[in-house]
Image 1 (tube, rainbow, N blue to C red):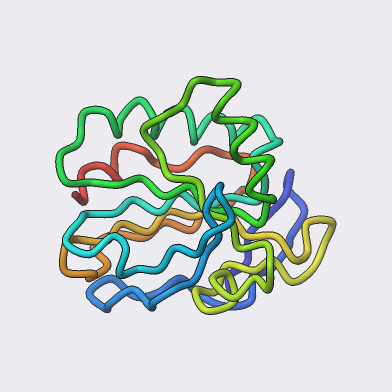
Image 2: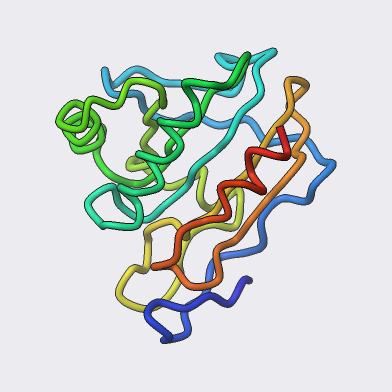
Length: 165
């Protein structure tokens, strides 16, 4: 269980992030068209998993914008923006912002991705949502970098994530 804060107030996650050097577990997440995405869909690609509580908060929106900007310069890399938001909300946000370089994926159905990767917030006002975290994966599916953001309203360390590619 990771201890994080929400505006200075302690909250906890369901576990710890996966360990650097291990393989990312397969997942089933929902795309904007309501089809299912799995890890196999991104085989051979480097991945930046930008995980956050909700697209409808300022910090989450900022991270999607920042990674969208960075992703346009990356080769053989996909940025996956993952939350428990409905795919419709994710699509609405990116459409309104003109963001086309990230892939939105939703864990709204059962939250299995969050539970598997120790991301589910288990107490406090955001219980059930995902914590703010980054997981970077190489083209072989091996995790090369993780960051559990300690204060949920803070942005992740973009430079460290991109350097791990």
